[in-house]
Length: 240
Length: 292
Ligand SMILES: Nc1ncnc2c1ncn2[C@@H]1O[C@H](COP(=O)(O)OP(=O)(O)OP(=O)(O)O)[C@@H](O)[C@H]1O
Ligand SMILES: [Mg+2]
Image (cartoon, rainbow over all chains, first blue to last red; front, side):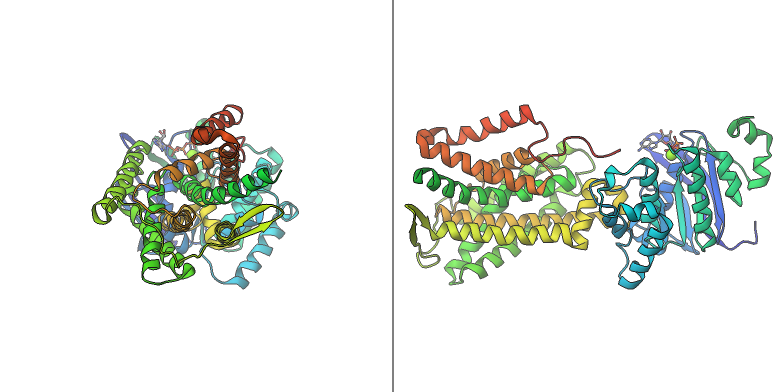
């Protein structure tokens, strides 16, 4: 990397939950147009990293910048407006609202009625199953459909950078493949991706670069290819 | 038979007032899981403001509008000053703060305006009665029912048809996920207090006219009853609060009409206990937790 224009930059970011020191000085860069994967075991701090970027938790020190601008103290709702969307762990769709309303909430920050309509069509073309269930209460969707809704909802914000937190969690292998190829498509359409995954094999397959997180520290980083063949990664995350 | 209809009509009016108050309780609970104990006192403030307008010669609708706007702003201030900072600390802290606000409003009013019972000037809402199939219909009933109906329709529209309403429902389901959609949670909470308190003010005016009483502690009993109505309907559910309010009003009126007026207030609590034993989440409350 090095020469890649940094879209997102984390410098020495620390996060505490009370007495728990969850992120211990993270440095991480995401370049424009990249897919960057962040892998690591349970409790390593992957979700915490994404939450800090989105501004839903406060950092205790360090600096997060986006397009060269310091967003460390920017409130979460303004960060979305700057073009960073997150598909959170566990989907977090609004189960009491319809599929349509969930997608409309994705467009909450936007006022361009025409653009919203176009994007709605784009999302429904990408996820035909959502179109069939457009007026259904979102809580009644299957797990896979909920994941599609969560991704669709994030797309409705028209993000430049999309943070995805374990999109493959709890999905059947065929669906996992589908979701990963959708992520690649989204990236090819011009959205930069920061992907958190337990499924390291798949994550490294589609990523350009990757970081390995262990108990709040980044222990390895490099091109996805290089990491996929790294002995430690193979042993710990790719099953030998 | 006409007796029964008469009681039901009275109950409907009384119940509408409960419903207007209960809606505010339930919206505020839905969005920040706080039982806003000061909500009943907002009713009282609304009644006083409307009374002031009436004494200055304003008519019903302008008085209603001024009272609603004043209390809406009061509600926003209460949330900002007394709840926002303590909410993240603990629910119990916020609840204690709410009780403090309630007492503050009651005794501030008492200090400045005295504890005397005041009434609306005679010309403010001239009473008329009509007879229909042996039932006496008072124009107060029509006023209460009409006003409630209009306000409830507006409220439903806001909650289910507007961008703000969508944000309110999203925040009450999952505040953090709503933030990730760019929803400003603090302003959405403020808007909820604005709307809920405006509804309470309307209830205050209607209550003041219906029972021709305005005094500093007038919000206590209807506030408590409306809280019961909200729990009865399923706290957090707006249609539930309306249903709970109407049901409670009607039941009370039937009990009072058929010789049990002494037990009227007790009945509300008995019903509450019975319903909660059978359906702990209330009539229209979520039977199962929707979150996955
Ligand atoms: N709200 C919280 N309060 C206290 N501790 C927390 C909280 N959220 C996370 N933690 C702690 O912070 C650490 C990092 O958690 P995080 O959720 O970021 O891990 P993760 O890498 O996403 O794990 P997983 O793969 O299981 O999702 C863990 O030790 C966790 O227990
Ligand atoms: Mg996680």
